[in-house]
Length: 158
Image 1: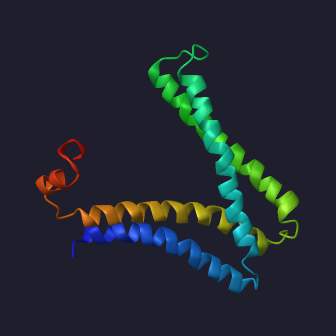
Image 2: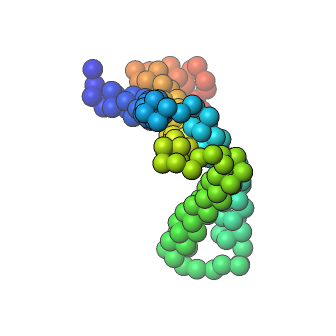
């Protein structure tokens, strides 16, 4: 078996398996239920519901208007800093809300760790699922002939 093929599979698989394994370990070690893990996971997903449209609107506003006119290299640096900070602010705002209103009982080390594992774990699980989805597509097409694909879906789509 090709080691690169195996590495691509393991990349996606471990991105899904490791957060689940960590959650199992933490729930058993600290004798906790899965509630805080799922609250942390929901907090991440909800933060992205606001964060992604905000970043889209900010990118449109800051790149396609005369509001900010910078050289291209400076614009790239500004975007990287601005979009990175916005991710942090959105996630921290939602994490604060989680601890303030949703998970009021998560005040110990183990409970906070489990909620954080859910928050970061669901991100890894989502990305791992996307990696595996792409891997499966490429594995199916691995030995495909381009001319056969062109006949099947049309030459303009290959």
